[in-house]
Image 1 (tube, rainbow, N blue to C red):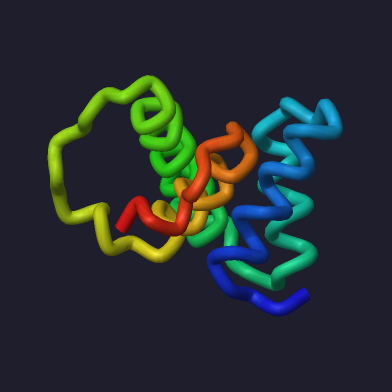
Image 2 (image 1 turned 90 degrees about the vertical axis):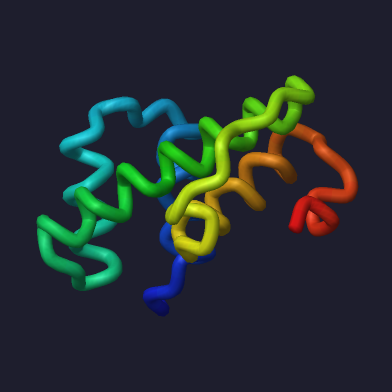
Length: 95
């Protein structure tokens, strides 16, 4: 698979949606499918969780403090996908 933030975030979320909750197994699958190192997949995994957490804040109408993660491509991808999956419309107007 092509390694870009949207593809990786989409794949992680789809694994969770199918019921795979074991983080180690999810990371192994991502590492294998996208040919990335263990350190990189752990870093990406954490950014994806941050983005999804922010999506929950946005859906609830809450704000979160601005910081250096706002421009992280994995946080942005997960936030976008999380908003879309949670039914926030139009998610693309978030930025």
